Amino acid sequence: MTGKQLDQYFQTLIQQKGERALYSIQVFLTHDKAALRQKAVKALASFPFEKIKDYVVPCLDDSTASVKKEAITTLVVTRDEEAKEVLENYRLRVDPKLTDYLETSLKKFGVEASGVLSVWDFTQYINTLVGQEPVQIEGEVSAFQTSTFGANQWVFFDLKDEEKNAKIRCFTNIYTLRKSRISPVDGMRVIVTGKPRLSAKSGVFSVNVDLIELSGEGELLKAFELLKAKLYQEGLFDADRKRAVPEMPQTIGLITSQDAAAYKDFMKVLTHRMGGLDIYFAHAQVQGVRAVETIIEAIERLNSYPEVEVIVLTRGGGAMDDLHAFNDEQVARAIYASKKPVISAVGHERDETIADFVADMRASTPSNAAELLTPHRRDLMDQVSGNVNRMQWALQSEISRRDQAVDQAVVRMERGVREMQYRVERAIQRFGQALVLALGTIERNKMQLDRITYMMNQSVTQSLERYAVKVDHLERYIKSFDHTQTLKRGYSITRFRGKIVSTTDDVAFGDSLQTELADGTVTSAITKIHPHED
Image (tube, rainbow, N blue to C red; front, side, top):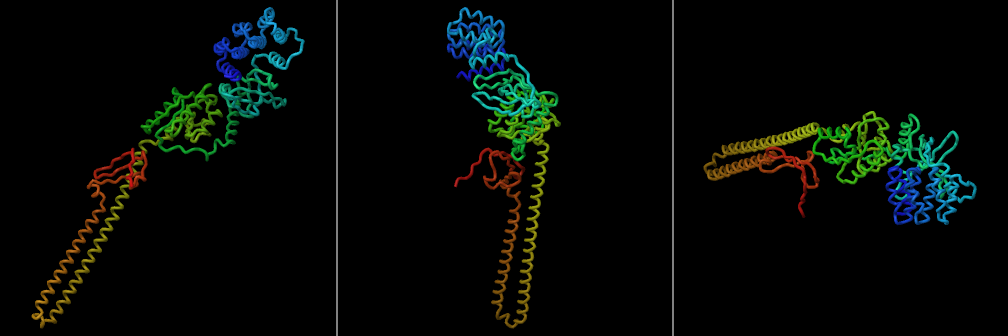
């Protein structure tokens, strides 16, 4: 770990743990490396003398000059009279090489104040003069920006006084911002609590912010409107970029507190309406200091699961301050960056949050989110019943149409038979007439007439037999259109969403199929598809 990284580590540790950080810093005071001991002594300057004297005073006798110098500087920074006495007594046993450094440091306590200071000593002297006690400053946020250095994300902004045309530079880190529970936006009026500091490296005077608070009544709503306008301008609310929420998802990601009533309401309605769904639950604090952090972590975690189809972010109602995490800019950007569609179900119907505007769908309550995601099983049954009725009507219409076709074929067949009978009768009639006219030749031609009569009878009989065969074939052809006869022979009809499945391309894995048999219908789901190989 580099010296800069260690400074950042100590600073973050102190901001997060306060005085409890001393236990962690103490470990470095006895480290083998002098550079680490020096950084640890430097970190002690953030605490009052009475809290650190047992840690820093022994460092005046450290084996390394750099650690001794840092101990002297830390005691000066405390501006404590007892610390000054410790340094004055240290004159008696100080290393001669450190005498000048000690005298220069004592000047910062007002002892022998005359003399020339180096630039670094001057910056330390100024920081000593302004003290280490936190101050509160009220003003308007301007030039707000964030930057990432190393492992930390830092926040910079100006605090302006429009009436007096004055401003001061402020900086802090992302953890302080989350602890403050607001998302600063240019134009927002705030009160910052922090320590003044003159940077020796850049010469810039600024305030190291420990806390940011909204100033005055109505500022919370103003902050909401400012952030809303900012994100709207960036396109986070655009309808055309919102993702479609799947119909009847099988796997749902749920983000809320495991102890919240919202969790119970959502699960109760979901179970009542549609059972058998997979719920991936990600616990998050929905209010408090760590709410923003845990909500963002939950969104990222659920996005890492491929099977999750949609994410529900929910909590119950509350005051605007209670809903701060859902009006946070970082949460809004996490929702916007989500690969999965997000449903925001925060508060009651009258509540509006930034998360509602960024989300792909808004639900008025946790229960409403469950209603939007899943249809009621009763509605599904009605839908299935309606589909069955429509299928039965379509089948009956087809049967009726084919019955009409058969009737028309029979009519045409009967007409053909009558025409043939008429022709036969006419032929017989003509034959009778010819027979009367040919009485004189009957005897002579009797054998020929018998032969002709026999042949005609044979022809008529064969014709009738052929028509009988055709009628039989036609009857069997008509019966072949009755699919119930086919089903009785062991066949079946498989449909997907009302359409007959004829090839494996018509279906996909997981599809629900309805197979009609001779004595009923079977519903099944596809687990494997084995197409025939060419």
